[in-house]
Image (cartoon, rainbow, N blue to C red; front, side, top):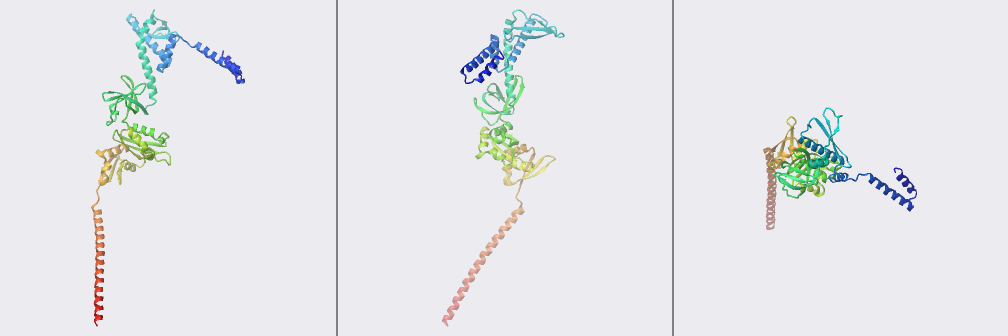
Length: 413
């Protein structure tokens, strides 16, 4: 049979235009397919096994192992009720994958070579009834394990979900094949959520709990903002632009320092986008949260100045030992540098990992005096110029009058 199909196929290749050869080829393929199907078990047990495997997305071997465990558990329970000493023996189950027939094998703990069949009469019916619940439970656990395996590869990435229900302060999110939990401390305090609302989340972690493995989501994490920008900015996907530092007070404001790994690429402009379309898309997802984007630099002083934007005209003095930065700001920039309730300075400190102390710089009196003196001099000069012009005008008038008097005297003569 193995050589039959290739032989016909080879001959038909030489005469592809020959209709008879084509018919022979198709007949051979059909025969081979039917022959293969004949080798596949079609018993009720085998069909049920394949159906469960396909429906649950599990391997048939996993389901068989689950059934074996359930049968052993059922036998132990039945043997204990009969008063048998089961603690001194090990047990295993053997299942025919075609017929589904099961046997229980037992051996002493200290003599594994002394295996014997201890299957009681009618065990198939008893085991099926007793093990049904265990089998369902094990299959659910295996199914959940397979699903968790899929999600474990997506930890740290964005995921879409729908608000399913509220468990006290926590939120249950429908992720399709399973559910996720967004705890209270991972929620944005200013954000109002509604049932059936579809949102993006950060898949923060998968953690073992009393109820088994569970998926934990976040919308308050700084990494959530970072991932939103990675989704909106192609330069980040291509690694041309990267986020070096990020600090966030969820629902209010985020500061982010970005860096370009490619010459000619403006990191800040790439994140903002044409007419601000990219940063606006992120802001909309965050419910209007403000996002400040600055360019990263290795110079700590310049980085702190940029982090305190929109304040300008700042001077920074660094103390490396205490990692404290003393910032002097002009009086008219002091409130901008500190921010409402100290928020701007607080976020700048988180972003740079430096303690920041901001002091106002008053305008010096000496400068005011010098300016006042300059103004007085200018005013005096202007006043003197006006007086000189007036005196010249008077002299001209006197001269004209004297000339008129002289001309009259000459006429009289």
